[in-house]
Image 1 (cartoon, helix red, strand yellow):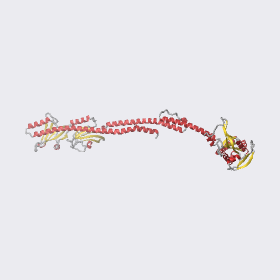
Image 2: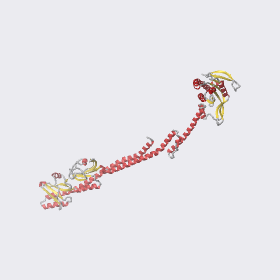
Image 3: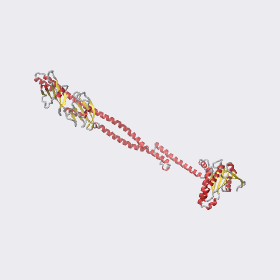
Image 4: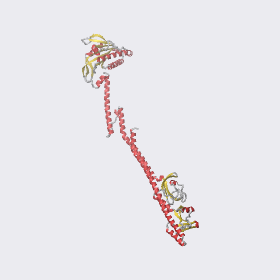
Length: 576
């Protein structure tokens, strides 16, 4: 991954990580809070409705108990009119009961007690089972779509008295209205279901679509899965979660402790959590938008950060490739990257100048190496040897090597071949001179002049010159056949060597100068070369004294040389 990719990942992490953590931590907390709020709301609703039912039921029961007690007292009176007046007085005093049915099965009594003007039609009867259960406490049961029945036992005032039961209508419409009002007050929607059942799980009140009718069994409803027991029991209120018709439901159940009725309500979890789901959708959309924005800003920021870095990388690449002409000027930045850009540009200029100087030095070395040895080149380049006009006295050895019979060969051969032959000869002889630490002073026609001991002083100048002369003769011996075959001539050299003091230095003008050796030692060496026979190396006693006794020489005696009044002791170097 490149620097731009890393920068983009960094910006995304800086932008998206806090957002992701916030969403990941806040949304679940908010969801739990919404669910807890829904649970508390449903529990409060069923508890409130249960309280309303309890109060209404308790009021009807109190009135029914009072009327039952009045009936028991009236049964003890001998005066029928007094008994009827007592019962009527009890009915009038109890506002929640308008009509009641008195049943004494053992006496075959089945009569209706009613307030004046009250409707008596349809006053419910009790069943033997209800009468049996009413001996332990009042029994409330649904009868039809609008009414239920409350059955209470009539107290016996004497042990031998017949047992009677009083059945009063229990109107369910007010209960239904109370349930509907409880749902409306808390803004539960049409998807909410509420049911009230008796101890036998028969429907007393039902609000919502798809519920059993009043009086029908509601035992199959999934809401009861969380209710551990049935029938009369201590009051409990629990929250519930179940599945119905393929939907997840949340609900609450509350049991009335005395009469054993149960209030239950539920609605789809998606409806209950609609606010949370909408908020989650909005938050996720905002988070997605923020992430997209972070991506765009990250791309922009990464490019803004990496563009100057990549420009520096490109500058470094061009510097490495020595593409000086393609380097742009430094970017106008005032930060650290701008300073680095300026520094790299200055470095490139310094490198370019250094390379130009190095190239000049290499060119100078190359030019000088064609004339002098590497040691002399280093001395000149490093400034140890002066290039100013002038000279100094120095002990040197001078060697002249001349190609014998070159003039006759040049007359019979094409000029191109003559030049090629000379170039090859001088290349080899120059290499031999350089190999032995000498300096090629000049080429004179078919003759080469070399010196040792100047411009770099060398105590073994005579020794090195004689060794070079031996190598020259070995070269001729090895290549003579090829020269004969290629150029059609017999290659032979005549060499003269002399040692002594001479004036060495730059001679000429400031525009054109030549490093050379001047003195008698040069003239003697030149004269020896002219009298040397083909393949003969002549040297003076001065050279032999300087070189030592390591060479095989033959004394030729004293000779007179042109231009000298005194004779010169001459020796011949015997080739190995």
